[in-house]
Image (tube, rainbow, N blue to C red; front, top):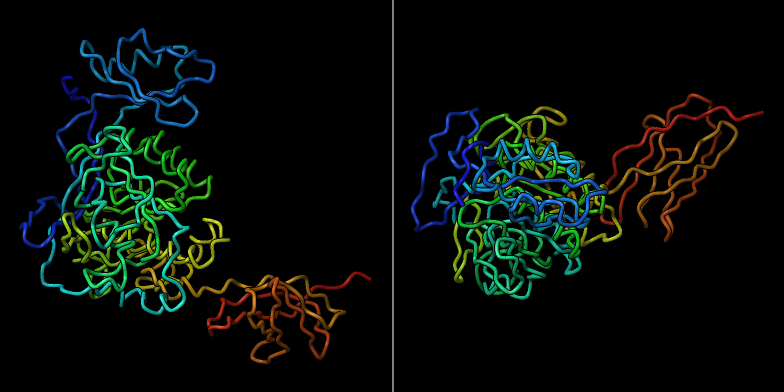
Length: 474
């Protein structure tokens, strides 16, 4: 089918090239989003619930359902028309809710630096200390939506679950994607197997989903992959890809995945721009910028108010197809480091919700930029040790001025301390259900402010909860 040259390309950014293949240099001005001269030949159509099956057959074109309700479809533009005209025609169809271009998605590469010879990122994010507590769990499944993976790589052997090729609709074939293999290894490469490096969460399983035909993909492929990940039980989705075109259908698929309890991580992009990149900039997606070996924002990394976390992205050593290893650079490498930490947290405490996992990542990151959330590092550079050993703020029941007992909930087995200023009023250890009850020597006047903290068995402290004593009812 002739490519229709109407709508701009949605660019998915895939960063890195391994040592020995040479490097390429992108000539993109700082702050300027990339423009690629490839146009789409499909549209995404949302049918109304009242639409009958086969309502689109009259357009004499091929269609493919891409959601789990049978209402969202990708439809090829007929040869005799163009994208703009076809959209206008569909918008006037009583069976159609809305139509949008099925944007093309393309991989892009960033030069790698062959001089780094170790996985320095583990030291920066304190992986080793996190591994003292957990190396992840086989019950946690990460969907890596990318260009496939080498299912036979010795450092990833036995880690793959429900692989799928969206291009050929095949569960029996998966391309040995260089990028996807590298990303998968960053997350889950085996530990102590005598070869290569180690993933951030080496006990985690990977669900590799290919959406690329050579270097491009459609938004509909990404949407389909998200629904597939949800249906087949993924806990986390990693998308080391992105572009500058917003898609309502893509956004809805991501919100559905989040509502179904998944943590969703995406790379922020490599254009050194503040422009919103998608899927990273959608709500409920952890947008990851890249830092250098010196723990500073990388010169290529995108930035802006949508950045949530940062992670090392320069010259990250990981798996490559055909039993090989190498280095890649970019936010595509930073995202799976965050994903790996999320997998460690969830593997250590499987009872957590996706929102609680996200909160642990945000609350424990190392604040590298301006105090608080900023445009370069978000909440900070991810810290595996602190995230795994996170202690939630205690929940404190109302304290009245006529009692000498304080109750509430905190981490199981932690020690809760109550202070007034610098003076300790009392402390107690939570029981097996996480509740505590402690006595103080004197009743406190209404309006008195008390601070309550919890300390885990491992010696980690929660943030302080401030509580004000209230007047008892007479």
